Length: 260
Ligand SMILES: NC(=O)c1ccc[n+]([C@@H]2O[C@H](COP(=O)([O-])OP(=O)(O)OC[C@H]3O[C@@H](n4cnc5c(N)ncnc54)[C@H](OP(=O)(O)O)[C@@H]3O)[C@@H](O)[C@H]2O)c1
Image (cartoon, rainbow, N blue to C red; front, side, top):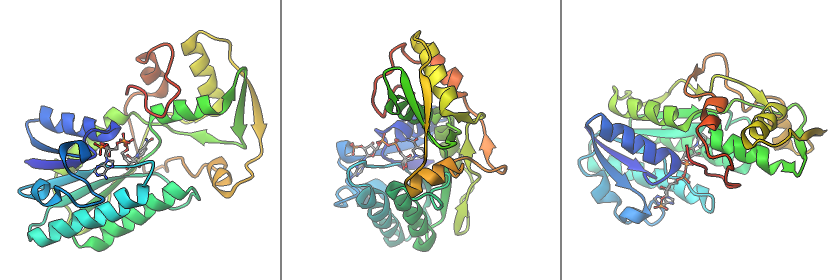
């Protein structure tokens, strides 16, 4: 099959593209660095031409709505005009419709755009990737003191495994209309105490003292109430946080993206 991957230079997209190529599919890698801009529409017609399926994994910290919502609307509009029923698979976030983070609202809006688009669409929600969980845990740590928000827990997942599942949806049977696939989550739920202890062990430093702070903002209350956790119906798999961490450099970069 010929599969267009938006955001193919990104954390998820690059792995989706690699997984599809390894299984013998033809991959069209689309992002600004290959001349495809979802905000302006540049290069989109040519990228969509001849595609059997699309994995939409483009994302932007700076302009998430323009890329993930308006960009998806532009993409599905291009598909409709092509007159071919191209299956669009998007990656979303577990709990995005019940957590008051502005970015999560964007994700929920993107899901509605796909549902209303009229093209065959599959939304796959995943929990936070291990790299993001590590980043948050580092962010909440100041020297030997780690802060935890209420009873915050997280169920991080292996980006590699998520990418393989997304690729599988893209080359699998397309739904008639809109379909919400089974949510994806890692095998284990952690609290911040667990994560900071594991990160300290990995770095060979003493575990920090954990200080619990109340979840004062609505979004933090949502997280504290476990709304980022996957439900019992979710599919769990991939490397655990410990297994992922064991394959990372001793000093994790203090940035959102670390090697997957
Ligand atoms: N990180 C997590 O924990 C997590 C968890 C669940 C779901 N997700 C979802 O996974 C998706 C992908 O996230 P990610 O972390 O892989 O993103 P990422 O690493 O930041 O990659 C973003 C990609 O989008 C491309 N891009 C940015 N602006 C663009 C534009 N205007 N037009 C076309 N392409 C554009 C970038 O390439 P160029 O710079 O070349 O354009 C890049 O390839 C997002 O939808 C996110 O919500 C993430």
